[in-house]
Amino acid sequence: MHETNPLTLATPRLELTAATLEHVCAELEAPERLAALLHAQVEPGWPPGEYDREAQEFFRDRLTEGGLSVVGWLGWYAVRRGGELIGAGGYVGGPDEAGEVEIGFSVMPAWRGRGYATEMAQALVAKAFADRRVQKVMAHTARVNPASAQVLAKCGFHEVSGNGDPGPRRFEILRSPGA
Image (tube, rainbow, N blue to C red):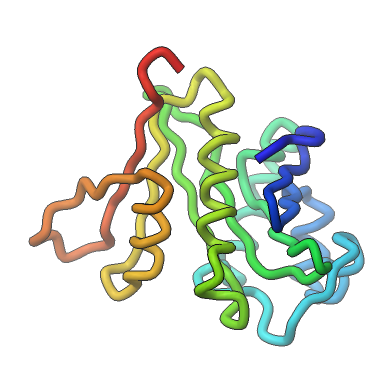
């Protein structure tokens, strides 16, 4: 991953753009407006997976409250080098007092199983650990979503939820000592 500016992340096949209030408001109005802002194509059925209207409204509210100071610690849009908006990911917010952040990601069905979620998650983890305050990155996934668990494992996360826990599975990755 390489960072071109604080609002974009470049990976081998993706450009991730940090969601601003303008992005999220456009997205809530019509996915086509978001596509125009990102200079990307958007497939019918946007948004993907758990990145639903409730998540969009959560990000809108956090951006309204926090302004520019929270841009980059919330949503990120994943645009494939071919110009397709293929997914969204990001953080639930900036690091807490313990230095923890939580990530999430979702990819449109047509682009699943091609490594894009892994690429996105790796970029988000690297971006988080670039901030010296971050000591741990965590993620939750539904027990019925083994694909997300595989993505997290590929990114170096370890499951920390108990096998008998009825709720979502919890994963985490710690900052490397000395990093």
